[in-house]
Picture 1 (tube, rainbow, N blue to C red):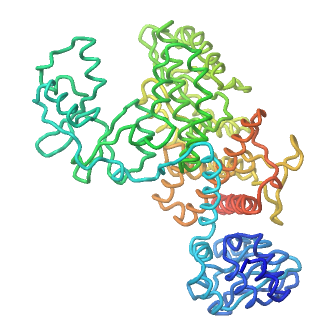
Picture 2: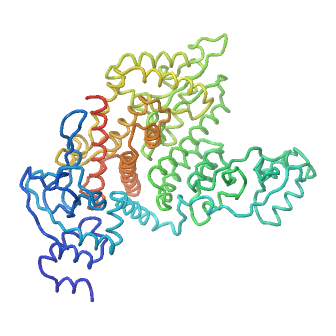
Picture 3: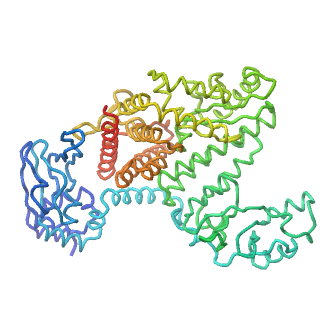
Length: 638
């Protein structure tokens, strides 16, 4: 019997409740029989504005609620501040109290009606039946928003998969890829015999191991070609003379994504998989990683990294967009995809610098710095340049003389990067600006003034210059500089408070009544996913990271580090990471759609264009940003 016929035999009231539930996750994924079970056992209750729906004083929770109309506000007493705070607001189609009813305990939050509100509720027995019989319902109850996030990611993958074909997930552990018996030899084996062994086993590489099976080198067909072309040694020489020493290794529990990123960054085609005792247990090649995919991250990175002309680099940028589509299809989450984009951007920047040094070497060693979103490794396809130069002044030269040599070089690099799709920075935050081509001493002075004088302009700068990374040249000068910067910030409570106050101004796109707050400029009825979605997380997390001596710049990595230091609660941090990643995923998907339609890339979306599940999760993600800002407000007494 079809569900339509079944529906027609059910009472009108049951049918109308089922129709209501079908629009909202997780009910939208549940079988009709389970929805009918809910509807048949549900009671509709009315609460006037301000009525208490559920209180910690009522003891163990015996009912499960779904908001049918209106809103429910969660309230908790903050002992430190001695005031009652709103911890959440939930609206139509949302459920409560999950943790308490599953844990068979009282709720820790007072639930109050915000405006006239109707709730559907079922008793514990009906709830237990549903959780035991309906998998989507059980998954949602146990994992909350994470399970909804899975549905969104699944749909992103399904959409991108349409044009790509089969996939291997990038989250697959390397032990699943690694061949159990990698081809190995001792360091003294003649090259001729090593090549014969590779030929017999039809492999492109052989691992050289010591007596304890620790990898000490790797020899590949590419090494053989180079050896013959350059006549570096004979085929009778021991393989240790020509092997690449200290081969790249990853533990078996690392995943395919880690391997792909390492290969892309360093242009390796093979890496060793090792156990806890650092012994070789397998080999992974780029062919293994992408054998079922028409995606080749490593090959694209190598092609960019070895391009001989600027025009080649310009033409390869179109492949990056195609790769983003493919990576989404192969299970990469938004955090992985932005790292992929950033890695390919880094490879492009390095290659532009290398080609220019070949043509016109300024003769002075320098470190090329990148700031803002690229400094955080969080770039999407919509990106401009934020870069600078750090140099150490050679003896016998003044800082101005060094600048005289470096600035024309930097101007050419900035212009060529613009040709590759990295638009010139409107605020002139570029290496060709004399104010951003500085010696280590000058950068140090600049940061001292910057931290001591918390001017409005410096606070704007903080969101750019305090997220920085070296992408070319010696890394140590930046490490030493940033260590000093962190120490100063940790000692300067006033600067921290100013930073926190500035971050607190970056409001998420949600009003206190849980409707979307639209931008005042640009497209009507739109939210800006970067400024109103991602920035509240980025700015707040930066304050906590700098105040607690966290050196990394990536927002998700900063959150992990803050959990390790005990600054963030692990559950809170997970919720914030998921919310941040979801906004990033919706933003990237919007960018892909804009590219498909030949539109200019922007960060604006109209929430009404989203389906109900995406809209709900976007709202929940903005609410998590509000929660993070509440922590900022309490910590810094804003």
